[in-house]
Image 1 (cartoon, helix red, strand yellow):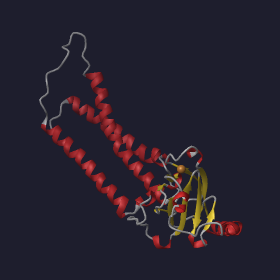
Image 2 (cartoon, rainbow, N blue to C red; image 1 turned 30 degrees about the vertical axis):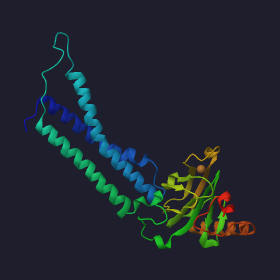
Image 3 (cartoon, rainbow, N blue to C red; image 1 turned 120 degrees about the vertical axis):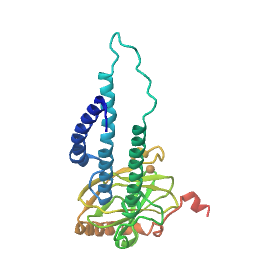
Image 4 (spheres, rainbow, N blue to C red; image 1 turned 135 degrees about the horizontal axis):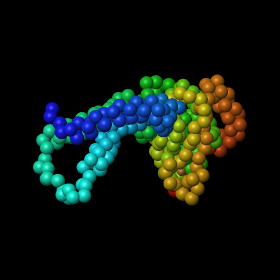
Length: 279
Ligand SMILES: [Cu+2]
């Protein structure tokens, strides 16, 4: 192809910078991108963020190089005419632009749909009562109900007699099926390092899956403005080893036994008090 010398220089600078930037994004920046690698779902989100950033880097660089080169080289110097000759379109550039941008957008749409639905990586987002994206061993998942109310979170474990706990511990390396709901207004359960964010809506059983992969603490926040003390609605949860989880839940069962009889029976959702009283 017959390229003007300026075009060739811009392309060379762009290729060199891209060849440096893309590996830096993948190897250096990627591991620090949110939300981290604490669960399978979080890892998938971090990988998606890395791929998108790596793909965007050459596009941003092309614009920056072209912009910088034009500012320096094509600057009007004293005595030169103010404007150059008009340009009347350029077929190859237009075709290349349309082909490349279409390929990027369509490729990302196919990849995004596949990772969300087929590969079940969208399982941490809260998919309503009948999720489309199921992790491989969904039927053996530990069921945990997450209940939001102004202004705190509580948790119920149907496989442990409907036990309710004031904070959340999860066993490592096991599928967990979160049933997110609310007792009053709309909240949003956001377990940041686990890559889970699901709306908590009264009367709705919103299911999100998570598969913790690393031991440690994760922060839980409400991410839906829900009233005066919305900002107070945070906790710290723990991913612990399965034996630690077993002894924690046993201890909770003993501590909460006296309170259990005051709770309504475990249900997939609850309605606010005034509505319940109204029948
Ligand atoms: Cu809230």
